[in-house]
Each structure stands twice: as C-alpha cells, then as structure tokens.
Amino acid sequence: MDGVVVVFSAVLGLAIGSFLNVVIWRVPRKESVVRPPSHCPQCETPISPSDNVPVLSWLFLSGKCRHCKNPIPVRYPLVEAGCGVLFLAVAARFGASWELPAYLVLTAALLAISIIDLEHFIVPDRITAPLTVSALALLGVAAVAEGNGWRFGRTLLGGVAYFAFLLLLNILYPKGMGMGDVKLAFSLGLYLGWLGWGQVFLGGFLAFLLGAVVGVTLIATKVKSRKDVVPFGPFLALGAMLTILWGDPILRWYTGA
Image 1: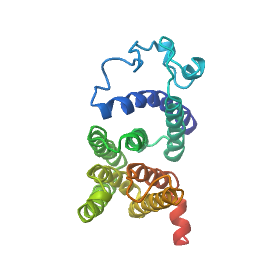
Image 2: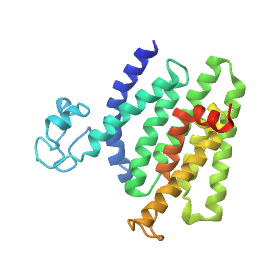
Image 3: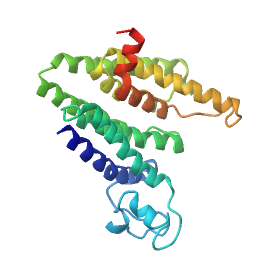
Image 4: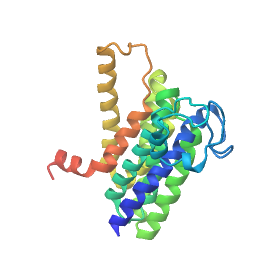
C-alpha cells in the first residue's frame, strides 16, 4: 500500500506542480488562479491539454509557445519536476497515513511561496492564510482519526511559539524580518509541532543557519551587498522541509539517542 501511495503522490505532484506555475505567476499580480484558464502570458492564447502535460510538453515544444514561439521559462518544468520529487519524498516519509495529505499541502504551498519570495520579495497572505486553515483542518482530522488529542494541542502550541519568536524579531528589527515571514512561521510551527518540540526548534535553527550561510556567501562573493535584501521565506521553507524529511535522525544524532 505504501508503494502505491508513493507512486500516486509523485504523479500527483507533477500535476500540482503545473498548477503551482499558475499560482506563482498570478498571485503576485493579484489575479485569479482559476480564471481565465491557462494561457501563454505573451500572446494570451489558451494552452491546450496536450500542451499542458507536466515536463513532457515543455520538452516536446522545445521550451517555446506553440503559437507565438516566445520562450517558456525553464522554471516551469523545474517546478513540475521538483513538486513531483518532493511529493514522492514526503509520501515515502509518511506512507499511507492520516498526516500525509496535510504535509503534501504544505509541500506545495512552500514551493510556491519560496519562488514568489525569491522573485517578488513577498510571502503572500493568499497562500499562507489557506495554508494555516488547511493545517488546522487536516491535522485536526488526523488527530481525531488517531485518537491523539494531546498531539494536536502540541501542534497549536508549536504554531504559537514559532509565530511569537519571529514576531519578536520583527518588532526588534523590522528590516530583517517581514510580517509575511511571521505569518508563515505560524503555519510551519503547526506542522513542526505535530512532529515534536525538537522539530520546532530544529526547523527554526536550520532556517536561520542556512540563511546566515547563504547571506554571508553572497556578500563574500559580492553577489549581494550588506544593504541588499535577501528573502527569508525560502530559508523558512527549506528548514521546515529538511526537518520534516530528516529531522528524526538529525535529532537522534544530536542527542545521542
């Protein structure tokens, strides 16, 4: 059963990745992600189903629109393939469990948020708000199904703790921490809190560690200056995903358990 779930999740991830490309393009522009249907952003010609197959259509069309021949960014197949791989990894981690749907939703949301933040320096409420609602709903269902109410209580406390920590940083140094990151931290705290208090701490630690390493590297290589803004959303997302996928062995290694 777990093998079937993993394969199904990988295929689902490819399809969701195709939708995420729409989200990544439209949400920063405050456009509907439902209407109009998928179309070329250059010539606005609707994309036929045969030209909308994840990864394969981009390869078949040589990375160009069938109608206007304008290039289709390589980001599109990369997002689709990346979402498929991440869904596969998450399904392998959780198997056929009640938690799996919640963490697949998180994975898709974090992929979209990371790219939007890298391109536009925003963490959109239009993604974080539904993510928070879905976390409460799906993890709540999982808690009821597993008869594990105390775990859901820890989930809520994890969200509050992570939110409060980043809110404090935002108050102390507003230029270094945006409110979009603070709101995202609440959602991440819910998901990490479901797994354990060690995971909440580890997710935050990895986010700040990776952010510091990349920031110092960019400054040292003169890609960025000290005055340039480096979006923090992708590091929050990466820290959370690394913790979700490999947090247990990391914590066992750290504690010597």
